[in-house]
Length: 260
Length: 251
Image (cartoon, rainbow over all chains, first blue to last red; front, side):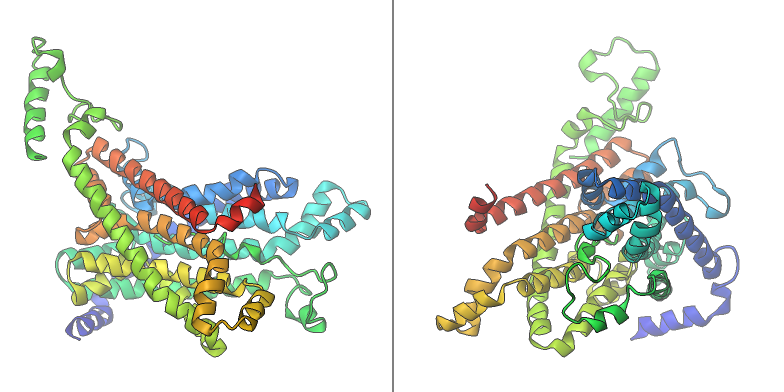
């Protein structure tokens, strides 16, 4: 395929990677954007979701925020932010043009999977374990910090992992409003019918997405407390209810939000 | 005719700036003129009705085709994954892999093969819908109680009849839940099709950004959300109609 060899040539030409509009700069820009957006979403969304899960209230809100979030196109959100007076299209430090608008749109986009997963994770910690903690005389905070949070952590991490990959993938959309990131390589190559360049950009974005996914999967494994993982389930393959402290896995369907 | 209102609009705006208060109130500066540029503007909806209608219809077409194609591919994939346990992890792995490809990257990847066409957008969106649907169908079929399957076999049901008469109806709630997620995300994703000029309402959003036309941008965005919610309701109602046995239990 001719286009593919064009893409290869583009990828292997070092001039395309260096400079202010080079792919390396754009790649770092997008990584910074993704990390910041995810950090904002974590700071805003996690405390609320964990607290609601601890109280066992507000489930309607926590679940529906995910459904509503799915229905709002990120592109539309981004377009509205860019066109609005605030945050507008101005330069925003290392984030580049339209950086602030992109940052807001991405942070909002990351919220639904985080909130839903974190809420369900804490809520679904088995009632017997919560009761046992109460019976041991733990205070509400102790129960949350030493019992619920460790058990909920794998599922919270899987929400964060989902959000990370989705935010990275979605960050490319910023290019549609002349924003920062690698999406610009794709749209640029595309609009100038230089398909090799467009495909080169797409390959880089896809590869980094895969790397982030693997990295996050590793992080998730590290966050799983000892004793929850496979060893205990091997001991009683039938899984006596109430005896094993297996983390809840129900939220798989709830976490399936859309990539955009 | 989307062209003529714009021409009028500029004339009207110029007159209004010149202090021509003699202008009849009906022809006053519209809320979507360059000077006011309101987000919400009923006059815009009125004047650009044909354009909005056309974009909405295109949006619905692309969404429907993509979800339909997604179901058509996902169904056999789920059946194969269920039949051959060895293939299951690789099929689910492929589904997850597709999901991590950014939509903005997938479209350019396909253009050299399918061109700047509606087909490109439909196939790309179908791939995304597929990843949700395969999981849902597999999960739904897996949730069918073994006793029911055994009872049906005992009654002499062959594999095909068992699937269509017993297993699928019982798996329907889970499958429909997946279909809802897939449809709503597809409606939102269709806007990205504006990259290849087939994005339905996304085209209007893109145009709205490029020309700083807030009413167009906001109306199109709102319509996207409305379509998503409406389709969601339609699927829920269809599901209720298709599973009459579930209604009595819940009531």
